[in-house]
Length: 351
Ligand code: GLY
Image 1 (tube, rainbow, N blue to C red):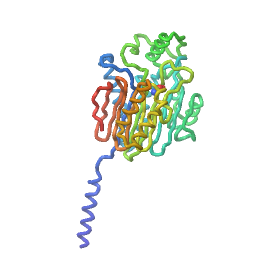
Image 2 (image 1 turned 180 degrees about the horizontal axis):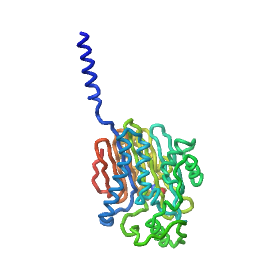
Image 3 (image 1 turned 180 degrees about the vertical axis):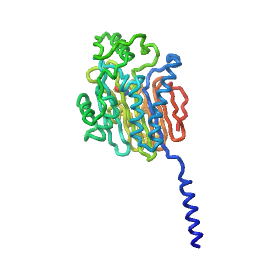
Image 4 (image 1 turned 90 degrees about the vertical axis):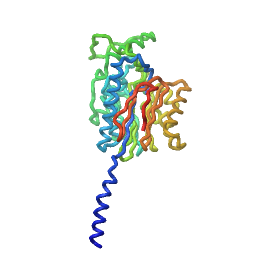
């Protein structure tokens, strides 16, 4: 009898781990901005470059999640890849203010604890998303702005760069073009930047960079959900203009098993507290997240705003919604390698 029981325990012991060997579940979704991105305007080379850049950004976060890392780490990893890539309007490659400077906004939120961190108008911190996270984790505050925010970044050891680090010729050409159209004065080139020879791709490749914000939502293998967003804002912005990206609840929100990051004409997204509202409909009204995202994006459109969102719920459901002709986007989960898309009418199989 004792031998029988011992064998039974051994058999159960062997069966136990085998039954529990389903891979841990995780999901990540990203955007690299929404806007007028028409088929045929983007050259095949540019199209392929964007898809590769999106794939690399999804993979950076997927790698964290695959290895059991947290959704916050995944959000930060993917966003830092896009902040470093001059193709996106965040970090290096950010659009210029009317004064010819780069002024960066970012936010991150932890859906488990409702902790949040945001920064607006920073110009010296290489990774604004890392700074938003430091605000969340290492300060008693939620939002810091301008020089004070950069000073805080330096005080916690985040990489500081000369503002010229963020300069790219194509964004400069876009600024000059916008200012010329508006009849506004063109500022001096930022100190420490050299004009590059050859035509800038900016005005000829058809990708409309009014909306190039980047954002990530992720849920990790422990069910923790998070959202983050980073942007240079809008070309030729003035007077310390700040968009929806660092406004918690508007461009970025995570909580109640839901996470959202937005891209688009920030003023409209702020008025409708887009990110929080989508999660509210999902949580309180039990509306599927795709339906909630579509409803709020159509509301943005009805008051005159353009843009899109990525949304995620803790069960791994991803939603993309936009009222523009394109949104750079992608996702991956434990079963699916990075999937990416650009145009609004592209079929993307969603989890
Ligand atoms: N959606 C980013 C901004 O308006 O600045």
